[in-house]
Length: 414
Image (cartoon, rainbow, N blue to C red; front, side, top):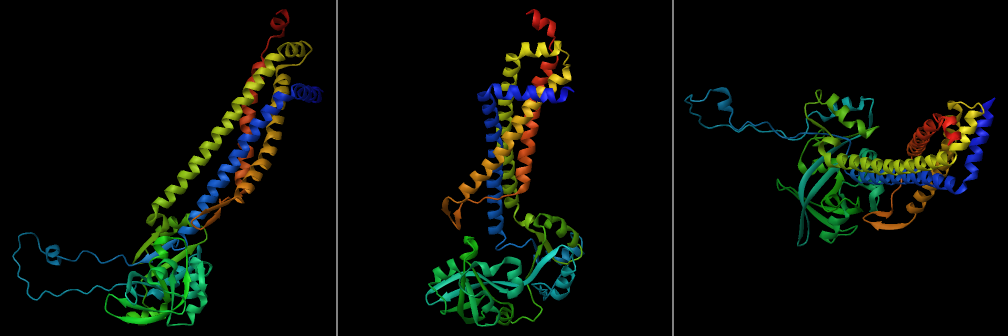
């Protein structure tokens, strides 16, 4: 029977000191809203950086990382001190690129995690336009599969990505490379390989990934035309780029398939450890700042609850003298704290969302960004609400336990 009465008493305590209640609610509101905003902002920054990185980086890369050290084969066979005389030593030719690429691609397509795969022929070349000559990378690509892995069509400034499929004489240049060579669409550019092969191509498009190292050095050509330039067979590739469903699992998948593939199989985490480290560091900072704000709000609620109990100490003694036990007193003040947490939590979620949306629409130009990035994940909102309630519960439970242990006889006697 005391249950409804306990709630009525808690409601009276809430409304009797509205300023104190509002201060406590505002503390929870501010803590939760800042938790939502900080995590939304950090997640948005991580997403932008990931998108920029994966504009030219696959989740898993298969490539030939070079020959073994065969510079002194004799010493590997004969022990130190053995007399030997070698005449007309024959140089063992090393085969570059990936052999039997079709079989490897077929095997990779059978992996359940695979999302997209593309073969590439990458070669260092000189791009020349009149007196201008720039060293860069020519990437021969399977047009459709390259777009599936890197969404290359979305980075086109001029021209059409799919036109590369039908133009063996067509070249798509990075914006920085085109600027350095003073080239525009429909201009001609000469490509010279290290082996002395040279050919003139027509610029049919310009792309911009906003990754400077890519935009200033890279050009795309169809994979068939690249093989013709290098005089290679139809199975020749230098890289196989693979995307999987969850890029966080790339290291695990790469370790599983590496023993089966006779070439270097490298995840993006292994080749770009600074990218993953930066992402994790920002997450840690966001969580640390947000939890600190929530703890500060919790201490504020704790102080307010202590003040309320000190002010209501005689009323608590009278309640206990009337038959209310320690659990009833605990329930009254815990209800008081949880109502503050619930109200402050709901308002905090709404306010945090409003702040995030507002900041997301403020013009902010840096590199390719037009606005500050924000991510709206339900996980951030649910975690903020749960942490807020937990902090409020602890801040309310400790003083309420102290109130439940008050001896009414001592208080009433003064």
